[in-house]
Length: 500
Image 1 (cartoon, rainbow, N blue to C red):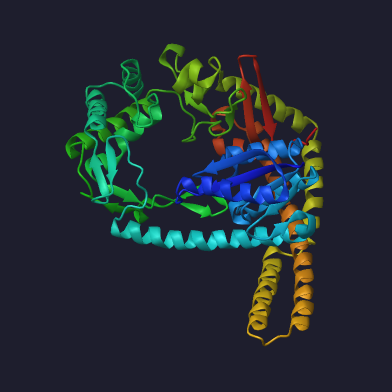
Image 2 (cartoon, rainbow, N blue to C red):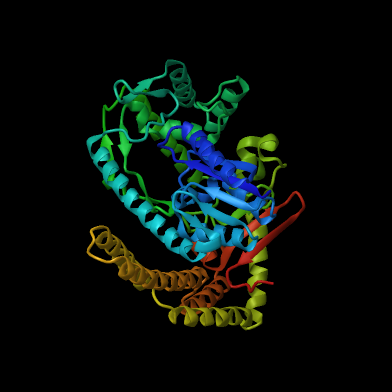
């Protein structure tokens, strides 16, 4: 008896019972084919495009690679995923492990239809884009009119379905007022967070208070009754990275809901924030750049969190970087002791590496980009994705039109079968071409001019004082830096370093 895995997923806008319905649907299917259920993998409230967040989906892939089941059942391709690249990668890994994949609603079975899986991935992604555009248009209208499309209430509020607006949660509002009162009396955000945590106050999600959340409450105009919408937007439905929108284009609706904080107190707090920020800038040593040298470059090798910049008075304002996870949650929350490194130590290591590269006449960089140029040449030989997508769209529309004519009796059965088979073969070839082109484009393809830019940057860094180094320069030559000072080690990953 073959072992069968079931994958069920519902989106945020569906009822929780949908997963139960999917599971029952599969059980009937399995009974007919005499499969043995190995496990049911369920993900709820995540978009199909967010593959990395679907924990059960990741477990499904791991079990498949380890051949713990023989057959995978999913309701449809769109339930499995809409991000074409990640979905095809996942399917490829399962195919390599000998897993049979069946999408019941689509009538797809990898034993006979493997060549069509790429086409369905493309169609699913196009459908996701259309849905995304419709949602964006709706949200833009809501933003303009001040209507609410995100009902997640900040601490101190609840969303009322009756009035379709936010109302004050009196118990939570007391904490918000306490935070403002403490800050107005001169307490810093760390002291406020410590006070709340030490006295058993919890956040809306029953968690401990973080510095980020305290800062957000103290700077959020929501607490004076203003609704601000349209601050960010997604770049693409398959890319969850958000793009910031210029402040002048935000939609601001004042007196939208009842305020918790008096406007006068709110503006005093903002002035205090600005004064404290200026004081710190004026009373510490700083370089010409308005951003710290290794910002967004250093991360914790132990827990993976980013490093935050620190200057402590007790350390004579020595600039250093420390794991933000540890700084906010301590040992219990981060799982490790304090992990920090001085900026001077990182600078010394970078200087030493760059001197070595320069003394070797940049041979390492030249060899690295010699290989990259080969990839560029290879990529240019491929057909463009836009051209392939257009051909796939034309063939798909032709197939739909043919089926429509067949159903209307305008095309005979033999003619339909012959033409449909020819279209299908063309589509299979196009999908293979597209997968190949996409695979090439996903490789690191670097502009030839970048070699000169990196060498020029290194020369500049070696010929100026450290005080003139900037974060922009560091990001041109460094991919990231991993630090584990609990073991007295750190690793600098340069962009021009060949893999070993």
